[in-house]
Image (cartoon, rainbow, N blue to C red; front, side, top):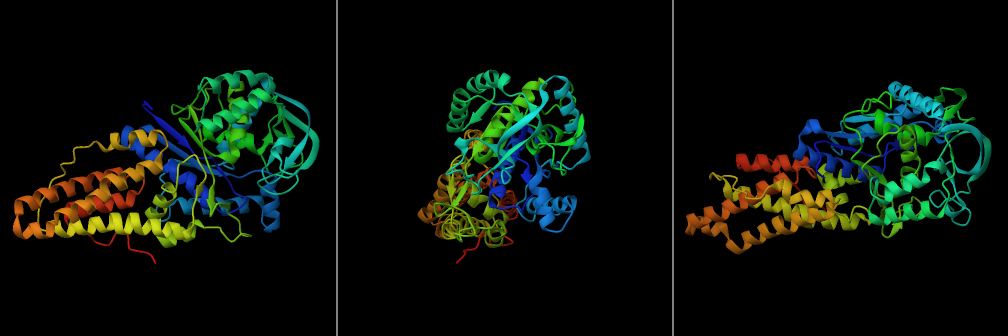
Length: 476
């Protein structure tokens, strides 16, 4: 991706409940990409946006159940996300954390809605459809399994109400052409095919962008008896999070988005309603929507009923910040569903991090004590990882570091026995140690996006020839 700038977003997370492992997975991946491009382009040319989606009927209901006002409720849950992203937890280095209850966001959304109304893209009508409160989405019959939402296991409500509608049918051909020509790239390929098939085989009906009986939302500027449909409000964060005030003729320098990172459950709306808004406004579409899979446990969707849920707090307590980041991103191809269990993660942690990386650093630093070695690494770390990360192959990038550097270095120590060479052949000892030190410098550079704290600790140990702590201890 030959850019002078890089702008990446996570979805903004719905604050009906505290953050879970799925939120962490998406955000860690975005953080890795942002850190990698900062290495390439410099900090000032990269912008990483995350945040929380805080309006809608579901929030209103959850707040009532908790005996709190909606604002109190969203303040509390939003702060839980910020705490989890903090340096002492998942170490997410975002540039902005947007909340859809921010005053500047609300004003910009109202300005956009007024513009869309003035352009004739929004009109007053009546909407009838099957509405799932859990998804905050209208559903087609094809979306349901035995008449129920597959994600929530509940039958959607048949709703008919006065509503303001966004014109979708008239932009369908243009949207399809942009996706097929990859001006608006939906990836991986299987998700592009899914959306193309949907757009070719079904008419994109005009969608409701307002609710009349939901008070917890942004009032429409041209009709305050309606509040903005939560998805329209949420999508605009990708612009307002850059400080945009809603003027379609004055876009932020970072626009367009280079990567909208999303989970597969929100692909349809991101590939239809979101670009439709931008097309109506005459604004460039995001370059890439990258869709990743779900996290399964033992082949099944995580659920309290099955007792197979893995909490992100539990992972952090057991594996630490960098261990958690490593295990989630190395669990399988990013873009597919990944399957994790605590047993397998403990096994991988011990094999890759405790016995692999941790053991290697301890051995090398102990042997190097009292000697001076330079960093003679001949590889450019940015080129080493570039192809993998640009293709979103984060698991392969980690596997390559582990296989080609860490395992080979441990074998190189076993084969060459530098502790014996130290006594019998100092020249050979220095040659062996120089290679090991140089390879570890490369490892420390390659791990910057994935395990930033570990990277710093490796560098410090190589410079001082002292290891203040065992980096990764075996877990039983």
